Image (cartoon, rainbow, N blue to C red; front, side, top):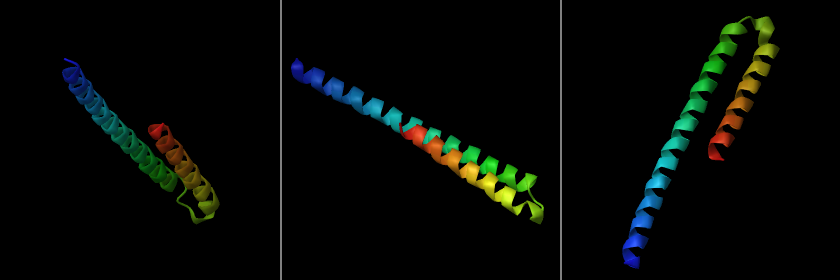
Length: 75
């Protein structure tokens, strides 16, 4: 009887682990999509050569937000 419960619990743990991996992959995909959208928004908004410094700040902020999003996915 105990052996059956160990097998059942092991299967449940593996299933739960599989769902966690899928959830993390979806989260990272969402982060990437948001990052790509933000980068495009920066490029659209600051397309004048005089805005190069502001464009770089916008892109840096997008990168920082992306890294933060990825860190949240992993926690």
